[in-house]
Length: 153
Image (cartoon, rainbow, N blue to C red; front, side):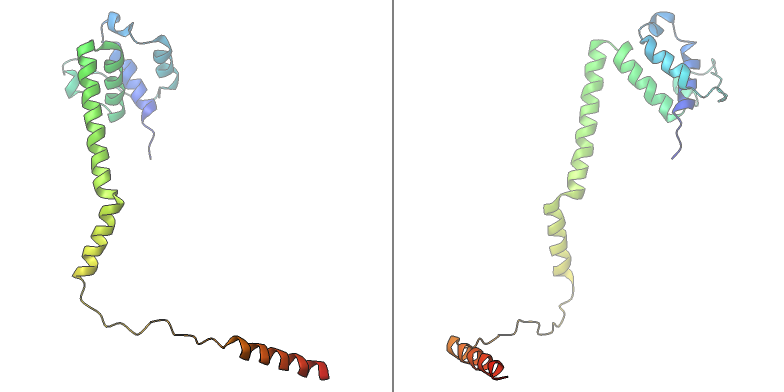
């Protein structure tokens, strides 16, 4: 697994150079300083000012960082509400798919259906064997006789 976040931080810093200062000031200084200290300084990224933001060749991590910055610092209350509602809907959708895929009840139902679809097999007689118990008096007599035989020696 490749850690692209240092490269993404470099892309964020480069793009923020072209964002109006009033918008950049809304982002906490700690966050911008973290981007600057953890960015990959050797990553060569140049913003193409002739392309809109959506057409820039950005890492997925960069897009995710900007999505969070927009949601947390730049969005209007209405936009925040809409974004949070969409995120909640997406999470519910994912959870629903997980429930369908991993629901224990469905797993057992699927196994039952698969067993029903299999061809009937001839089974060996694996029934338990009945064990006959000796009656108490016979066991007692046998114990006493074995005990007496041992005493003679």
